[in-house]
Amino acid sequence: MEILEIITKCLAAGVAAAGFGMLFNVPQRTLLPIGILGALGGLVKFGAMYFGVGIVFSSFAAATVIGVVSIRMAHSKDSPPLVFYIPSVIPLIPGFFIYRMMLGIMSLISVSSTEVYLQNLITTVNNGTKAIFILISLGIGVAVPMLITRKETMKKKEPGG
Image (cartoon, rainbow, N blue to C red):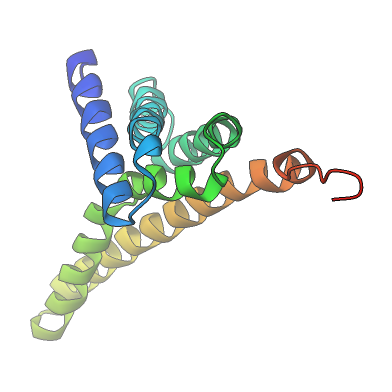
């Protein structure tokens, strides 16, 4: 993976995040920050993978960065952090591994040879396990910053109001 390919994937993640923001009907003032946050998440994930970090930990790091930055963006744009981190994390979902797992499950039905069946089973389980661990790492990566800074993310109530 070259640097130009990483930048291209980052920009695609940013555009996809903004697109999911539009799909979820977020306020218009939050679309640009959501796109930037999606691109930042893509940069962290694909940049870490470029330096040899595994895809699960790269996804976790990207989701953690998205979670932390979305808290700051939420305060600056006066919106809940959920508006920022949900559309920004969706482009990081491992659609390739889920697709390959589903194809593998379908191929297991039609295989007659035991050797081919076992190879397809191993590949299917491998793809499914990667997908599950990536999804778990995305969920934990976004949730941990929210849990740690829970008190800071809530607005202070005015006395007597």
